Image (spheres, protein in one colour):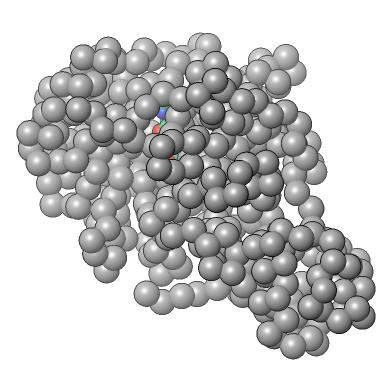
Length: 384
Ligand code: SAH
Ligand code: SF4
C-alpha cells in the first residue's frame, strides 16, 4: 500500500499568531511542525507520544524535551479538547458524551462496551448533507436550515478519543467506528489523519482492522481512500437495487450501484482476506422482503462480504417503522442459506436516548425542534 500523508502541504501558521492544536497532528504532521520551526525531526516522535500516548497536555511536564523547547512549544502550540457538555451512562454500560465545539456546534461520541471489545463511535461532521430518508441526522440538518453542515477538524475528531480514554478504564477502547454524525468520506483528509492517530503504535495503537470508516458511498473519495489507508470499510447499502436505494440514500442517484460496488471491491482487493461490511437498515415493508434478501445475496455474491442488519431506530417524525424481529431473522437466514455472513446489530443504550445523535437532539430540540442520529447501537452480534 502506498502511504501518502493525508495533510501533506499543511502550512503551519505559527507566524500568524494562531497556535497549532497538537491534538490534530499525526506523526507526519508533527514532523512537518518541527521542520517548519527549525527543530530536529526526531523530536516529533517524542511529542507524538506525550500528546497522544501518554496524554500529557502540559508542555512543561514533557521532561525529555529541553526547557527552552518546551517554552517554545507552549508559545506556538496548544492542546485543546472539545468541551464535554453532557455525559450519560446507560444501565448497559453504554456512555455518550455531548461535545460542544468552539463555534457552538454540538456533536456526539458514544462508547459501547461488550464482552471482548469496547467500541467508540465518533462523529466526522456537524450535521450531514446526504439526506438519507431514514436518518435523524439528515432530518435534523434539514430542519435546522440555519445550521450549516461543516467538517470537523482532525483535532475535533481525534479529541473524541482523548475525551473517551480520559474517562474510561485503561485499554477500554479497542475499536473505533466512524458511525457518528456526518459522512466521513466528505471529510477525507481529516478522517484519514485521525485514523492514523488512532492506529499509530506511538499514539493510540489500535489495530487497523479495528478502525472502521462507514460511508453512504462517495465513490470518488472511496477510490482515493485505498491509496491513503487500509482501515476497515463499512458501506451503508440498505437496498439491493438502484430504484430503492435512490429513494433511501439519495447519493445513489449520483453514484449508483454499478459504480459503488466495484469501488468497494477495489478497496479490499489488495487487502486479502479483508471484507466489506454492508450496513442494511431494516425498514418494515420497504426493504425487508424475502425477495430483497435473495437479490441482495445475488448482488454481493462476488465480493467478500458481511451483512450487518440494523434494526431501524425510530425518532419523532420518522416515516418508517422497524421490521419485526421475526422478519429480520428470516432475512438473515436467507442470506446465510446463500453462504453470506449475516449479523444483526444489538440495540444498546436505549435508556439514554437510544443511539448516537439523540442526546444532541434532546438538548438542542428546544432550540430548533431538531433531532439527530437515532442509530449506532454498537457492533454486530450473531443473528442465530
Ligand atoms: N454517514 C455514514 C456514517 C454515519 S451513519 C453512513 O451513512 O454510513 C452510520 C450508520 O447508521 C449508517 O449505516 C446509517 O445508514 C445508519 N442509520 C442512520 N439512521 C438510522 C436509523 N434511524 N436507524 C438505524 N440505522 C440508521
Ligand atoms: Fe448522513 Fe449517514 Fe445519516 Fe445518510 S445515514 S444522512 S450519510 S449520517
